[in-house]
Image 1 (cartoon, rainbow, N blue to C red):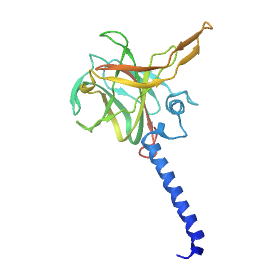
Image 2 (image 1 turned 30 degrees about the vertical axis):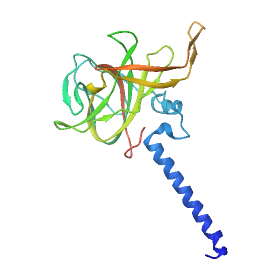
Image 3 (image 1 turned 45 degrees about the vertical axis):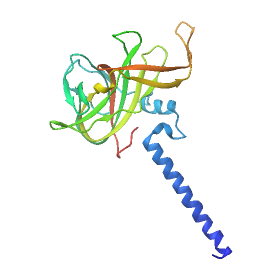
Image 4 (image 1 turned 135 degrees about the horizontal axis):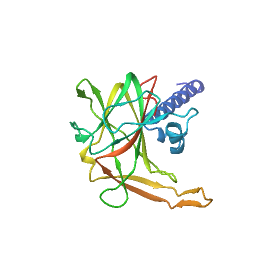
Length: 234
């Protein structure tokens, strides 16, 4: 190769390198939105679960039966000892059914798992959610809501936040797996929390690593949004 050809090939090499870097970043962002350098956990939490420009209506589901959920609406519901049970592919579990008014080609499911008091001891427990899309009388392979991110704020119950995408979905069974029982959710070391109280004092906590045992029952808040493309919305 002549030395005079080098200036012509170098720009092409740099352009190819830039394209590869951008493609790698886009793939990392699709796999895990928190891994992308431009979005922190706080930004992700506010984008998916924070106060939007238009408040999302939240309703409380009846204690039993299927739960009708229009897209763009949040529903709070419990999976208790009275909930039905089924032998799913990941084991027997109590569950609740979420029903959308129509099938969505692409959807994002935003899940909040609210911590409950531990009935067997001190501290709190949480529910490990699995989503089974219902097709007729059958269930698709479960989609585990992961990763789950710990959200601790003053004067409200601690919760785990997660988001997954689904395709061709109208009915969802929200369940767990018996394999989770006896295990725990463990968070990364979180920062100290400091906030003013209504009386003018300050609520503070030290930085701590949180461990929450998984339970067979739990409380959740769920929202389903219609998305234009597969894999979007989280």
